Image 1 (cartoon, rainbow, N blue to C red):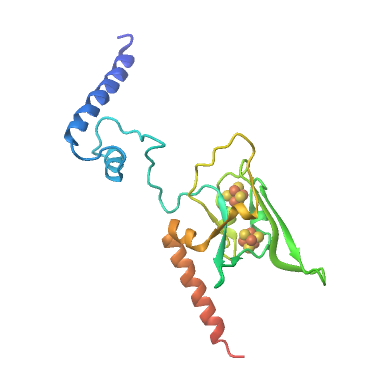
Image 2: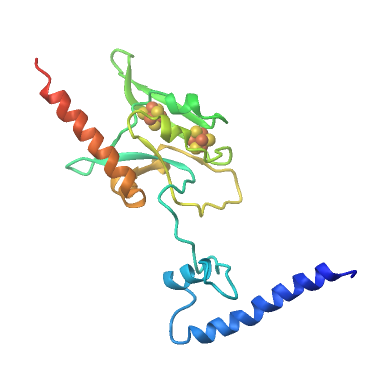
Length: 198
Ligand code: SF4
Ligand code: SF4
C-alpha cells in the first residue's frame, strides 16, 4: 500500500507520545526529569515514551574515557605554586595529526640553553579533533583529555597556557581510575629509582 511506511512511522511517534504521559503517571511523585535516576530510566532499556535529554537543564552522565579538548596538568606546591608537569619536550605537538599544538620552550637567560618548562603553550580548539593522541603519547602525564564540552563560541578559540592549566586534583576528579593507576606507577618508579645503589 502506498504510504504504508509513513503511517508506520507516525504510529511509532504516536505510541511514544502516549507512552510519555503514561510513564509520567507511573513516575508520579518521583523525579522523572532533572534527576540522574530519571535520566538513567529514560536512557535504559525499560524506558518508555520520551527518551531524549532536556539539554541544557539535563545532561547525560559522562564515562571516564569521554574526551573533549586536552588540558595541561599541574601539581600544587606547598605554597600554592602551579608546577606544570609539562617539560616542553614537544612529543604531543609532533604526534598531533592536525598539528594544532604550538609550544615555545623556555631558555636559561644567562646561558640561553633550553630548560624543561614551556614559556608558551597553545592549542587551537577549532582544529583539535579530540583524538587524544597527545595525552596517549605524553611521557609525563602532563596533558590529559578534558570532560568539559560546553565551549561554544562565536569566534575562533585558541587556548594559551593559562587557560589550559588545571590542577591534578581536577584530573583525579574526572578520571579517578586512570589517575590512580598513573599515580601508582609514578610512585613505584620513584621508589625503584631511590633504591638504586649509588
Ligand atoms: S604535554 Fe607532555 S608531550 Fe607535550 S610537550 Fe609537555 S611533556 Fe611533552
Ligand atoms: S586531541 Fe588530537 S587533535 Fe587535539 S591536540 Fe591532542 S593530538 Fe591534537
